[in-house]
Length: 615
Image (tube, rainbow, N blue to C red; front, side, top):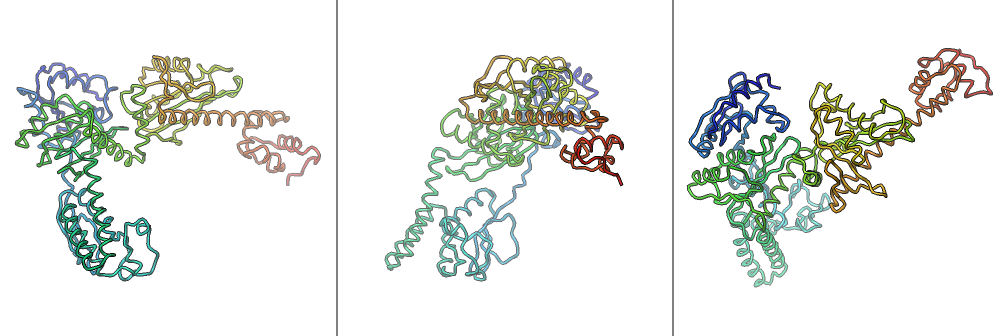
């Protein structure tokens, strides 16, 4: 916590209710964040109030603020212009800062008669032919991949003619995506013709390529080269199929950008799809620490289009924000013509925004080692339970006992939709004897939260609070744990998992009644799997303790062996079977054992052998 929090809040409360820009400084005087506000007092004072509702990035920023200054403007639009200028000038640490470092791409044609077609980011002095540069690397990559598939050019690491007939053709040959020159059955003339056709396709586009290929097909047919004409016909069909696919998907899209974001576990990914002439020609992805959700989209747009000189007339967003009119006006002035910001609700534009957001989720999932499927079920869980943020870190608890004996609890953890087994924990109920699931759950969560307050590191194990707590049970368990959380002044979403008569998860219960999940297959499967996992973990621990208790009771029936010695023997020999097979010397060597107790244990397991000498 910032020691100057009270002083900063007092200063913020004295600010005017006017539009302007505020600049946060650290102890060294450096500017670490710049923002704008419609009413300075309301916006700035939010930073220095309760920190529970702020994302981690904002909390880190506030903890480093030593002072702030502000500049009053005549309008919110003027504040936006000034904010952009100051961010570009100072590059504050906690603002979204994008770099224009995409570079250029080239189409490379390998040296020699059997040169291959590829795309690269840098030219090299290797004798190859380079076509370019191109600014849009995504378009170059996609176009080269399409050309190689359509014209059946090899993309493997084999070198020709060196590797002729040295190995069988790879999978691409069998799925008709390569002519397989490695077989030695493709003539050089045929290969060079396909390579030239691919380059014509890349340089002239699909329509020009179809025109040229059609002329070549007709010429081959007139010369009675029917096999060659058939091969060219297949290439024409492939080019047309590729073009038709684009037309079907993007039939109403002209020149525009589609922008969407996805946030999870303290990170946000913004995805940008750029369309030109009805075709997706570039795509960009940006991942950074999540900040203020209210202004993140606005801040990204300002940063992104500050770098971009070519601003389209239409920009479709997955989600809107308060200052859309001001940002639209800023973009229009920067472009020199009207720019329209929209948040489409239906139709093809809405589908494109959804696709863009799915790709943002995929990019974020890949960075975190998860999948879009795992993130989508967490998104569904968030919406179903009405959570404020994605439940990326979930703890689930269950109680297990047999008629009140060996009362235990198990905790399983799911991170980004996957079990995090290193974070699983076991609890032995110590506060009372007998069976009381409500009291057991309350004790378990009390001890868990006590560990949280004692933890030195705030982001590992018990040192972090989960985004969601699930209990195996109904309203009684939820009420018992809710009382614990209120006593400890903790605010974590809490729900119970309710089972039906067949012991299957049927609903989620909270303070406001039950929420049915049976109709939501993906969420139903996810919660059922989690409930089964915590039940398996808790009952496994219970069985282990019962087994050990049984072993200890058999050992403590031996004269001279009490609870302490029984535990020490089990720990040393691992199993009762190993104890029964040990001789007296080995028993004497065990911790807590004496010569007399070793003799008693040996006689217990070997009553017919008498006393063995201990040499």
